[in-house]
Image (cartoon, rainbow, N blue to C red; front, side, top):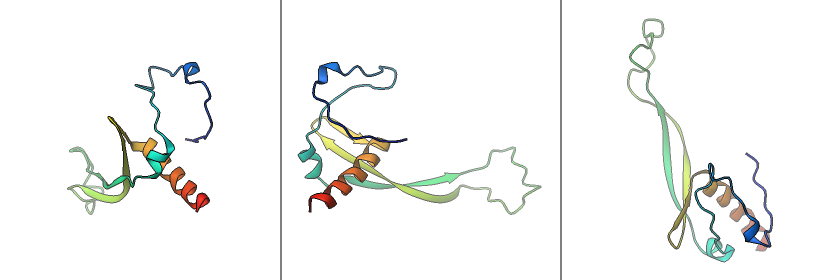
Length: 102
């Protein structure tokens, strides 16, 4: 995924693919810069299926095997919640912007 930054002068010309976009809304940049996003940590784990060949790999864990995790960010604006990959990209952008405007 490659995010791009741009300026849209006429929102009436936006025609999102309705199979991919549920809704288009605008959040003022100041509203995002003023808040600290809520951050939670997600654990990644896997568990082998019942037919896993434990006879070939007897040391393989039979319960959940916890691996590394990652942070998930949540931004709120009015009735909207921005999260997931969008918030992750937004977080990186806002951090870079804050460093530039210091």
